[in-house]
Length: 179
Image (cartoon, rainbow, N blue to C red):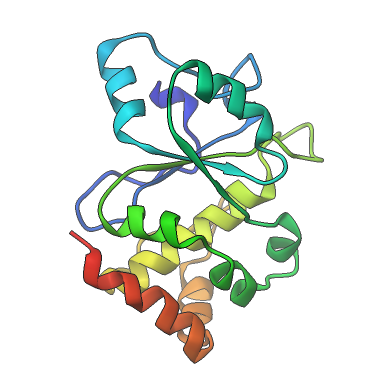
């Protein structure tokens, strides 16, 4: 199953856990699922988020596996425009609460115009920024941040420092629930 996860962070206590599934990590167009007990237990203990609208095709698989899911909206356009304020402000409260409480969150998104790379921008850019931002704000931890092979931790740290007061407050609110 671990080969079926991209943009995942290390699963340590002091880091938010975000995993993602995209077309690139499976042959069937959905997350590569394991039938082993460990793989199924991992899926059952994780929170599943379907990115609107390009993740909707994951719903039949999630329902077949009887995995509860919720919705999230990370727009690739906001990533393209580097509109980090919008990305932070549009994060779902359920998503942030589960991240803060230590649950692994898996996001499903199958939309990518780049057929060569196949990974949607909401995953390779959006989730990488979100992972960095919540770790930076919640744990004062500047974890490595890499976009297309380039280190962007200084850039992301600058962005986090320059977020509006309301965006910083939004992220800081969930710090009290971190484990």
